Image 1 (cartoon, rainbow, N blue to C red):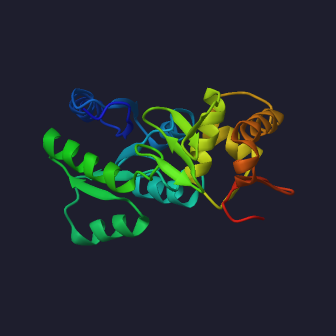
Image 2: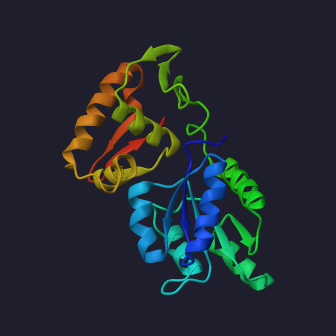
Image 3: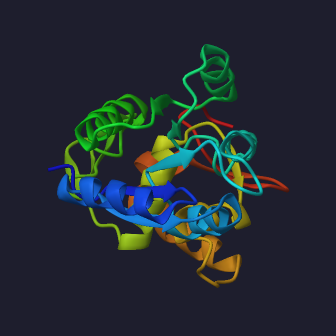
Length: 231
């Protein structure tokens, strides 16, 4: 069972969404649904799905146009996308892949094929630190046991500090503003002040101790960055 992974199904046809949701829930996935790109966008910010299944032909914003927008936005550019389509034309497939979608399934498809493709894409696109341990300069985060250790000695982290560290370790060497961190770590539907980020950064640095607090770097005028290279 691949439990815990959340999939957003975006299709304007309710029976198709339902068929997909039943198949994925039986395979251990958590499903959320949207009937249009407009409805899907806030759900991506709030629910943070691990994968988007996107229908090509939808009224309003088409699937391909929505995929293009997701890829351009730094907050959503890494989300794996599988395109569902009745189009079998080679040119359409190439257009979809050039947009940056990860895979392509032509309707009609069997639920078993969909689950198999989904597993393959998730396996390919999941960075270390999400399902398997990640280590940077002898600091190790194990997402399965929810433990953090420094040179094999356990460190005590609160749940928010753990999520913050996990995000940083899987997104190294990039500067993030406080508002970006609030969206990406706390979630877009959580209303907390930006100063909350500073409080948790301070707690995280304290928990990491002198051996590793240099990894969490303040970027003047921007926010914070996780890097093993000293600023």
